Amino acid sequence: MNRVTAYVKESYRELLEKVTWPTWQQLQQSTMIVLAATLIVTAIVWLMDMGIASLLNLFYSIFK
Image (cartoon, rainbow, N blue to C red; front, side, top):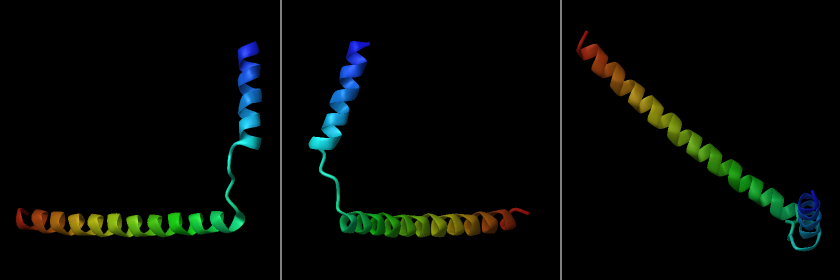
């Protein structure tokens, strides 16, 4: 039990003293970058899905 208590205390101390937290502006910039990247990847996956669906519909229509 002493090891668990020591681990929690050391982790708490590390969070307070050794971690460099981002500023509000840095956090907003990072959020916008992640949001933009997410939208781009979503658009790419959506386009790929539509393209494959169209190809499969064409393929199925040929063999009806």
